Every structure is written in structure tokens, then in C-alpha cells.
Length: 114
Image (cartoon, rainbow, N blue to C red; front, side):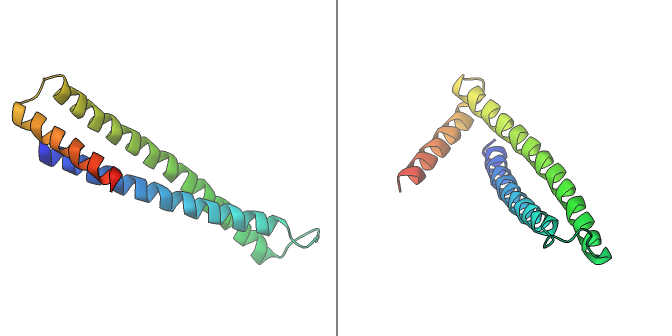
């Protein structure tokens, strides 16, 4: 059970890291798209610029969808982790599993104060 909890914790960290990276990329693409929309007051832009804008818009849509998917996975992981923790606290797990969970809680609280 401790391996499951450690695995969930690692998975949670990985998901949060990936979400931050996707959000950073999304912000960069949105900024680039806004920059492309301010085309020095010209009525029409070159074909290459239009293609770049369309490519950026497509990437923004993909990153937005990817971000939503990662947020759902993150929420599912957190829910699973909380369910395991709650079950342990309520006494629905073996004593050694409960002890392992309490130990993890102690470690996490010490990390917060260091």
C-alpha cells in the first residue's frame, strides 16, 4: 500500500509539473498570437504571417485541450490519494498501512516547516 501511495504522490508531482509546462507554453503562444494580431496597422498580412497565425491558433487549441486533460488526470489522482488516506484514517485498512500513511503525513508536515 505504501508503494501505491508513493506512486500516487510521484504521479501527482509529475502531473502538476506537466500542467505548469503546458500553461507556460499556452501563455507563450497566446502572447505570440496577440503579437501577430497587431500587424503594424496594415490591412492585410503576408501569406507567411497568416500561416504562422493559423499555426499558433492551432497550437493554442491543442495546448488548451491538453491542459484540460492533465487537469482532469490531476483531479483524479488527488481524489484517489484522498480516498486511500481517508480509508486509512477511518480504520478500513491494515494497521501497518495506516502506520505508513501517518509516517508520510509526518514527513510532509516536517517538509513544510523546513
